[in-house]
Image 1: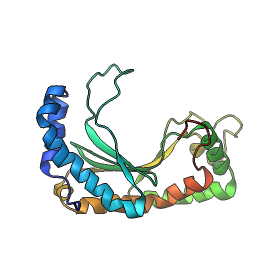
Image 2: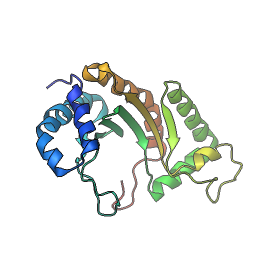
Image 3: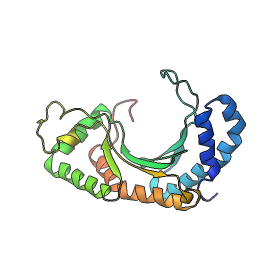
Length: 214
């Protein structure tokens, strides 16, 4: 099935779930979830696969074991792509992300070393600037208050050294285009614009070598 956008019923499903996050609501509206939410996401991932890698839709159930919030269902559908992309739909609209959200210890060591080095560090700054020129936000995750131990506090790229993750993110509020194939164009444009950031991370950070890591 070709991707033709998400119908208004997809947003209505999540609006209803936000008001009644219960098994009763989910069971009564499961057909709508499968038809109006899940099926379009699967179609989008199929369309993106050749350029951005295989997609995987996350389960709709929340892990409530260690959470004070015991509501059972996620209020958004999300998927990851093999090349590092992320797509999310909720009642508020569409969002996409890319990068490395949480680096393992060995990745973080390589990231900091590359940021500190003049050639690769300045290259990252240029990449981030180019991505932001597309109206895409690039931010750190779990950032320290200052440069990490072993690096000068006044390092010219101390702001980047502080991060334990680095991601690009863009939100699109729900509009009429969300129900058309143009929604794919937004996501595709985002991934193409952020590819240089992913390339830098893949080249200088790479996958973790720690057993059980990502």
